[in-house]
Image (cartoon, rainbow, N blue to C red; front, side):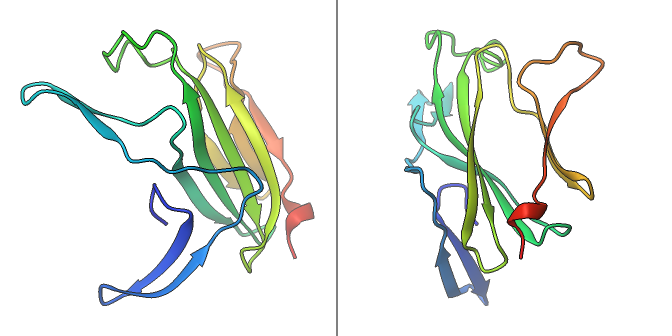
Amino acid sequence: MFPYSDSLYQIKNCEIITRKKLDSKSLIQYFPEKIEGDSRSARWIRPENGALNSHLFRDIGSNTYVRLVRLKEKRNQPEITDVRKRLYLDEVTYLLLVYDLDWNLKAELEIIYPSGTRFENLFSTSQGLFINKPEQKSEDEYEFYKIDLSRFGD
């Protein structure tokens, strides 16, 4: 899977053997990034409503595939261009999609990380899928949402 694509590709010897378009109930639009700046100082900017695939993995315990898409972002204070200062400014919306082993869509969940928070972790264990909560009580202790994927499998 490519970051700006709604399809899975099987490639062999630099040729596409198969292409599978992945379904979603929500509208996912992939727009290319644009370069902003000059020859001395430039950066790539993704449109606010431009999606980006960020995670794709198979959850062995539930026999499902999980895909996480950065769906859109709402830019607060766009005049601040320093990446380090922008770290927690934007509100970002993610879309978590769950597919069966034949890539049929089983579930879709929209997750919003408001300004001042950010997505950091997504991992699967035998106990389920874990994703960090937007707001943490402490820098030293993380809290996670636990999602039971077993109901979406075969």
